[in-house]
Image (cartoon, rainbow, N blue to C red; front, side, top):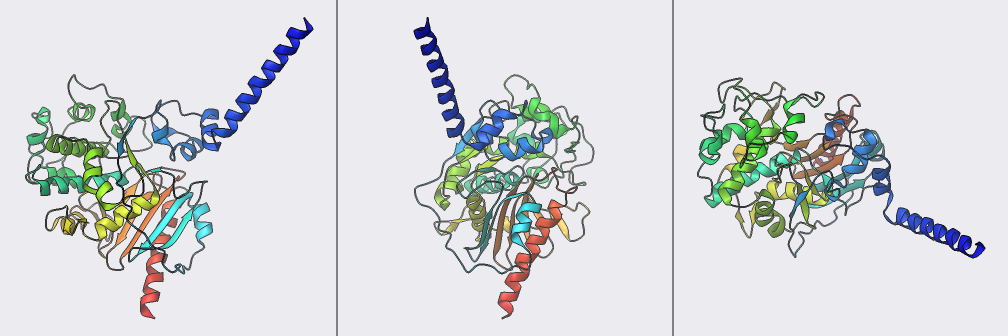
Length: 401
């Protein structure tokens, strides 16, 4: 009896030792996930700890969200180190107070500032949220250049005939790109009954993309082209248009047109909706340096092998005010937020961004885990804007010498 008891004790001890080794090897973020896992896919209502843990690994948690790979190529676009940028703000304090995971500042294509927080690093992938909208709109331009889409003046129903007879009758692709379709949509991130909170759980009609099926349920709030209304659903619809026109998933098309030929450092991923189609208004996981590379790609005219992948004049139209949403000096282009001074930004909830200033040749890529979706209550958005202004001021001071 004693011999069997000893064997049992040793076996239990070995089991606990093995479990302990696994617990150590899986790393702190997986341990945090296991201890406090999200119970659904609705990131808008996750806790702060859950967001801090999962924003860096959403594409690694298949029971939450699946993804498609955006393949990188064999050659990496170099980002040489430049002289460290002298800012008049405390960057370490910014990283803490703005709950920033990363900041990469490029000037003339060189890294002038690179900083990481929240136990994140240059090799990790952070989710973009609505920064992905600006990448999706760029794919529309590429599809026009390739001839897959004839014109942004084409009607949405030309490419998604299932929407015929809906509020999208008479709505052009350009009006969807500028969020002026006139179709009613509620983007209130604090409202569990809003469209942005509900669309991913929608049960689609048979044979129809979930977002198309959901958009069929919406009514008209305004005449097309008259009123700006922010809608993640419409960018998801843009992704469907690109896929139908090109015959490729948006992940495949982004890899083909940008990610591989421009030289991103690593594969990225694009999260899928419940129907297995990329949520093109959201959710690209990539290294912050690669988000910065995308900003540099756009700043330099979207050029691959000496030629732009976009039609003549596309960026001049896409990155200036096409729609007014009531903020002085600001506007909305083709899925880019614009300033009247010529700068523009891809912007995502909880503090993701790619800020581009053509006048100063600046790109700022940043990722965060703000305390709220828009970062207003904790002041994180204001702190990020202050960082942008500090970078601009530092470049101005250098050029004045």
